[in-house]
Length: 507
Image 1 (cartoon, rainbow, N blue to C red):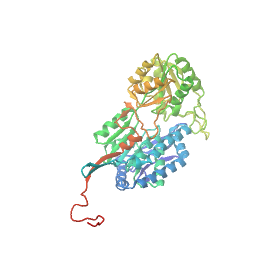
Image 2: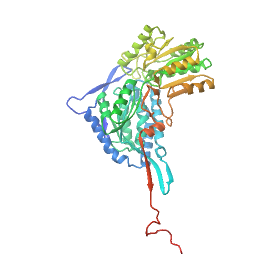
Image 3: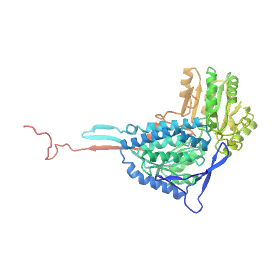
Image 4: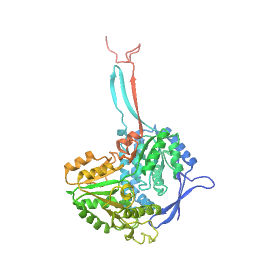
């Protein structure tokens, strides 16, 4: 049966109105078939969602921290109980394998659990007798209506980087998910309602640039959180701040993994394959460049090729698939074009993913012949200036660059315009410490290929990977979704004046 995904506004599904509503197709990436449609919001639907959020904010901001925490705990329990159901939704629309979808949900749950500690997270400070008879204290208060614009690659986790803390702090939320895999956001909205969140605190509008621009311009939206490509992140940041909003816009990446000669090469090869081809490379923390400090390059490439040959590429709903399809045919074709460019630029095509075997049917027996498939691809002897090196490909393409020294590898990483994540593989603690100090990247892994921080730290890069100065979740997230207020107070001493309510004594 064909699905129809509508907006979620004020605690209920709301279809796009008008005589000729705009809609987009929802594909099953494994088969290439259209499995439903999603409504695209016009300005009227965005305004309706923001109005619902404004109305709900009036009471939610005054709801006790104890009650907010109860709702968060209830949401956490519901999501944990129904994670397999949500994972199946993600697999059907994004294409990633079921285990990867479960991992995405687990990382989002970490932020929910962190937000459950909101009474401690937004505690202020108090200074008694700052001046004679004067006390000073600080409090943190919610912003109001906050907008979240999330990408296709993590339809559950990325929104959960933001909305648990925003809601816990007393804000109300309007989420604009990717139109490519919209159902996860509505599923989460239903769980919030079941958990007891008041109507209007969490809203979802689907669509395209029309919805994005209206959120950026709307005077009642106080902040924007965005994750996506660098050009769009720059646009979101510049437009949102022009309209007076607080903006955190996380952009693209070209993550390097530096392998020193003393590294455990089996560990490094495992890490390169896992981090390069997991989720078909469609993640901003994927390793897309492996920097091998010779003389280990040849051996490392051989170990990676051996592991790539064992990868089973097939539908995400098949339990034995290691890697699924790409999200759309258009994106698959774009990634494939980079393989052609790499060959033309003179890189050595060590493994051609275009010829990788694909499982022929999904778990229900549906044919995968028209799915959006591309197998894992490996280029060797890649050099800066080649498009496979310069651009964020966002697909299962791993490039190997050869260098002769640590210093040359570090210079390569630091010269890159992106600064999202990086990793070093070595058994030398001094080299690792030197690298973490000298590398100009926001998140660093030491023998860890995908250094996504746990929820009580914060996620975010440097340089062209982040616009704004606030990272996602953790302490930065709490700061982003609240405003500080300092209060200076003085009260007259009770003995002042003619009344004295103190305990009577004999004088």
